[in-house]
Image: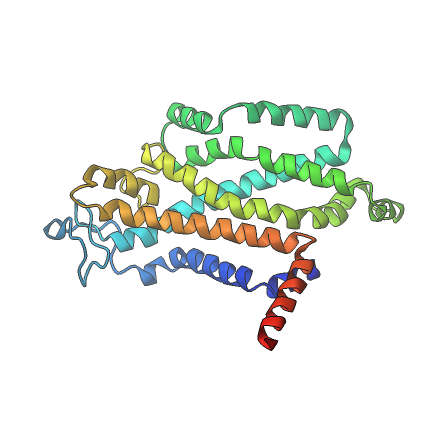
Length: 291
């Protein structure tokens, strides 16, 4: 684990992307201090203003500050996404590790359930379930969680199968560790770093799913500020006030790109060929400097 940290600290691109991701997370955390207005405050006298000193990103159809709603909307959007990612990662990793480590009928049972869930179109299932249960943030989290764990299960199972026959696992058993302790102390520390790539990139994927549900009116409900719902409201005024969809759309794209690039950078760090690439890059830079 320490070697991965050292590699990360030596990667400029990873550190920049990590800093940007932290900033994007901290902005909604400090929404009360950063937002210039109450996100629910209406001002009909200033409705559909493109931009001004008081409203830097303009206002919507009932005079609410777009900038304030974007900042506060991050709390809703990112909180839901983080909850979904935490749930599906925990469930998927647990099932995958158990399947890969136990083998036999346990592995077969979990794998078959995983295959059945994968066979169901996830987007259609989420839309159908939320439509049946009723549009709300809680039902959205439930529906997205029921279909999102399969990738983690498949990847973690494959990783466990690749490490469970190593000598250090047998030595841990010989040292008196129980099966649960072997999983917790030996298997997971060797598997989890690679799963961080999936977790990081899943943030962007789930944000797009959530935004799509909100765009259809199946997630957050008014007057809750949420990026996807802001797109849903703004599409009605796409010609008269295009900034109503430009700003929330840009924020969503920015978050998806940053977290996807962060996952790609993390994958490069975890790649065994990373050290070779880094040495080659240093030699090239040294040669350019001497030239």
